[in-house]
Length: 333
Ligand code: ADP
Ligand code: MG
Image (tube, rainbow, N blue to C red):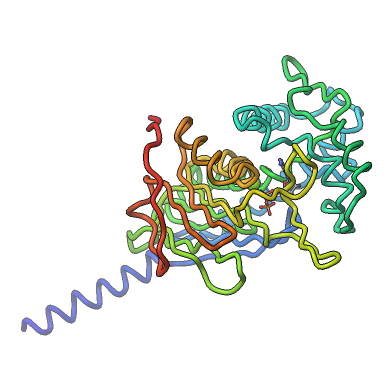
């Protein structure tokens, strides 16, 4: 009798977990990268359709190369009064994050990104003169955002926050549609909604900058984990590797001793901007920034392969390698 009961319970558990773990998946190519959306539970298909539409809408809105985009309008001073309030808000937010990082993150970096060919993948090493000239047009503090956005001489590139913002928007959309378990991977920008269907946290691998394998695993629920790394987009010339994260101070790919930064927080837009900024800053300045500002956690991997993890991730990060825990951030509510 007892055995039959156990069997019945097992069968019920099996079917209820099957019902719960209904999985719907979609792969999308947008914003120059491969994105994968996975939704668990009922109505996953409807959520995916809405999520995909949202991503394409944002790609159209924010792609500075497309003449119909808001960023094209701003950069070329065309129909600026028709730029959507949403774009203006995002530009303001990106500038705000930039200012807080002392412009290590600077969306006016566009002319420099262009001469390195990172925008249209026509990679080349520009001359020092070209870099100096391009840098004269860079400076987030020169953008006027008091009323409408007035870029002045500058041009903007939202590449450092667009995927994070898209991830944030799709998560909001999913939550509004009643989704309580989902995983978004927008070209390495990961965001998780709720927990896994079995109630456990999601396990997010932090990629090893050297290629295969991973440096560690983060156990997260309701969070974004965004990585900026020198291995994501790069080219080689004359035996030197050049990557796509530019130090706005030098106009060269940032050479800060870091190979990757993963920022964990609820706000994916912030996580995206900060991952780029902290990469540019390097470990010391980045950990000072974390101590002074708080509101996020991070995993740093240095060029000699050391791993540093901020204290809020102490119980959420596992690795087969040794790592150092950074202490003392202010805790923000
Ligand atoms: P990924 O796009 O690979 O996820 P990031 O989020 O770090 O990586 O963004 C890098 C992109 O942001 C670059 O391709 C470029 O368009 C832009 N960018 C590069 N350097 C900076 C910078 N210092 N500040 C703001 N944007 C930058
Ligand atoms: Mg970024």
